[in-house]
Image (cartoon, rainbow, N blue to C red; front, side, top):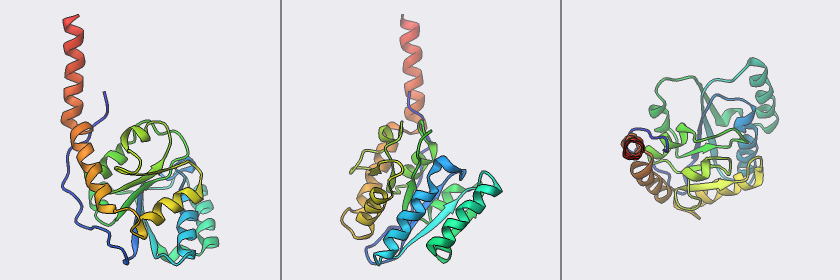
Length: 202
């Protein structure tokens, strides 16, 4: 039975080609989440003339890792284009500040709830072909998927959104509908109930 999250109102901020693209991520920021890959992809896009910014939500796993990431940020000259939010108990409010949700995980993702939460808000999702993520996000339908650890593929996926090659709103709407149908709390409850029915009938 797939996990589910409650249905949400859609975000009010929609990306329009020509405006700065706010890329958001939500995580306990640690090495396997791939933040370095995302930072390099954003730097690559900015180097190509695209105004892409990062809105990062969540604490760092350790001070040592935060310092390591900060060194990369400094080297890529991205500090003025990043907003570090840190921990928050109101993730839904942070989704409102994003145009696209990115989870660039390298490994270790079963069925990430934060992806479902982003889909519930109608955010297009850009993520990686890691474990359970392709079960949630259909590539080219609800979002875009890249190989884990591949800066060029992640930059290309985000570049397709910023350039309007793919319609961000359509991806978000499709993901939101998919969440409502297959990954809501009600869908999860129905799935569990069906398991009980099958066991009891046997």
